[in-house]
Image (tube, rainbow, N blue to C red; front, side, top):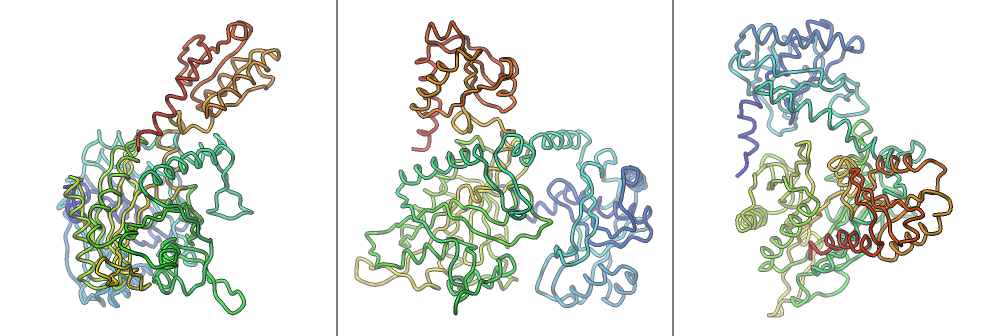
Length: 604
């Protein structure tokens, strides 16, 4: 089994990063004595700390801070902890307004020392001190700064960024300084190399360069516009998954982009996710909401007619567009948007069908990821946080649903972690955490077990003994958000998509004007066989056309001239610059169609 959340927090690397955040804050206060400090947690690849600074930071500041951090580390200062009263804490941080706000929230029970929301009020607060710096923090930390390798830290690996205090864009904007820390210099250098590679793969840059998508300020932030090549890429993925779903017994449905507010009040999405939804729209005497979720709509399709046990499992699938209000500072190309399409499906199953159906869904998602080359993934079982009041339903139903997910993982021999607080408000879930070629982890596919929405909507079916039990729902989305998934794929493949997925699979390069007619004929024949082809009739020279096609990562370039016209051949050049020479058109067509069709067979 993979490490639990608690095991991660107890690890040496976690403590190194948490401690490095405190050391960076100490160095920053020496560089900017009038700065106000906010919070500084460890993150997946390092740490950060937020500051209110008197001026923007520059490269000289960052170099100074990094050097000062290394001096502090070499000083061998112990990390010590003590408990203080709220009044003592307020006195100590009298000149630090953000710490005072955190202290007040802690006393009222709204946050913990790291700014995360909790329920229980604190009577005592925890201070951690190293050298001259003391912070409000619950730990854990290293015992001594010498446990950190000064050659395995860096604060210059990522430019400073803006961050709103408490994530609220109506509050002050702070300066977020990032750092990274590792156990060895070799680990850090490998990471910094991957970071440089990530810049080259940035889907926002590649998306524009390859003509996949654009974002218009006049249309609105977080609302991507799909250009023709991006639309082809997206459509190819959708058609592939749609056909796979039909082959596996799913039924397609279509639902509207807007519905009455009462629908989401019944489901519980409103008000549970009120802050991440757009404001209701008044129409006549009713209030409507831009659709934040597809599941209530699918439930109403289920409820539109009486169902029998013979109808179950009923699998309803839709590529449904939903809308969420994301803060402007959190928007990022395709990976964080305000309008996105979910490859959603909801399965209505009898209780005795739950385990087998759940395992089928998990196997389908595994096959999808493997087929796309996303082979490095783990499973995360998200359970409810017992200290939170955001969840609905009885303990019995939650325990039953969680047990089914864990049993499915055990049966499929799927490594998993159990992480409290990662459940949906209506039920536990299994998330697929996928690592791309840059070793970054993304939450993609998800499968959820839900006993609660069938209760809230009062849905049932006629059992074999003529009773009216409730079905269990399985929510699942292999890709999750299509936008986010494609953004990740762009970076994973660096825009060099496999042949079946490439928006343009073949570029015809006629050497001269007299070869246009032959090139058009070849293109028409390939298109009729299902190949995506373009003919480059630009005025540039042949070498330039080949170079441009290669820069667009088009898998095959077919160069045609007099000899090809006479012999009915095509001269094949690959985007890797490999020259396959002249091939009969029929042979090339058989080869590329075979590549495309072999992928479509993988999931059947």
